[in-house]
Length: 342
Image 1: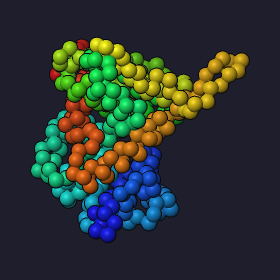
Image 2: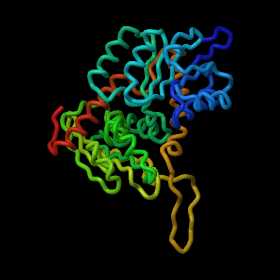
Image 3: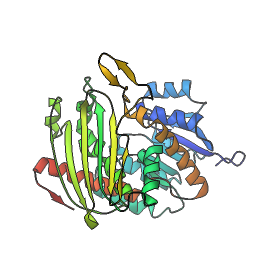
Image 4: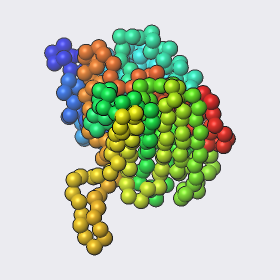
């Protein structure tokens, strides 16, 4: 950190659609953060950074950014296949790490990162499960912790995106890990978090291709459902979709022995209600950016505060490993048609 200001000096790596959002948050909206560097192999993205961000040092090569002694922490928003090695390289370079999900699409790689991170206990390493920082999800978590619904035993959660007629998800399918690792992994993490982090025992998953026929080539579906049995009799039910007509509809429900909590059942873009000949309705959040804008910001602020205060913030590497383990079991169940025991 800079001695004069006490601010955490960050370098963002990856400046795609989500990387740009993170970069702007870190540059302008996170007290205690100084975005001093940005890295992308794509010249157009570096040009965007040059024009948009407050004069960061720009790198085309990740190794060059890691060699920058004035970078305290890296913020990885890169392809999933690169995450594990990039985290290891950052830790070896003495940098704190924030990495977007998933930790890896390979369990052995997840375990390798955990083993490496154990060698650097003084460095903060966080995986970006931002729903933990969404004000509504956090409020539900606090109420559950306070005993508001008794003992929670069942979570129903969904991540459903507005239908993409451009076919982005089909092009992405070869490297996404499938719908459960790409979309449901957030719901898996939320379910474990709200249920007290139980260990999964068995999963069953199935799905269908409703619109995007190109997904069949990759053994993927555009709509999937799954059930996960946890230890101590706890359960979770998941739905993932890429074909919704109305927008991004992400919501969860937690059922306990003395009540229930619903989070985001009505995906509102704002508080305006429209009354006309078509009925009474409200507009929906068009994308996950819009739904979780506050969560991304709170997540960044919490990471900076955690590094400065030496505590843990958000999902740990172990949490990310468990979410990946469950998501991979769901993918295996989808492909085999059989339940998978963990």
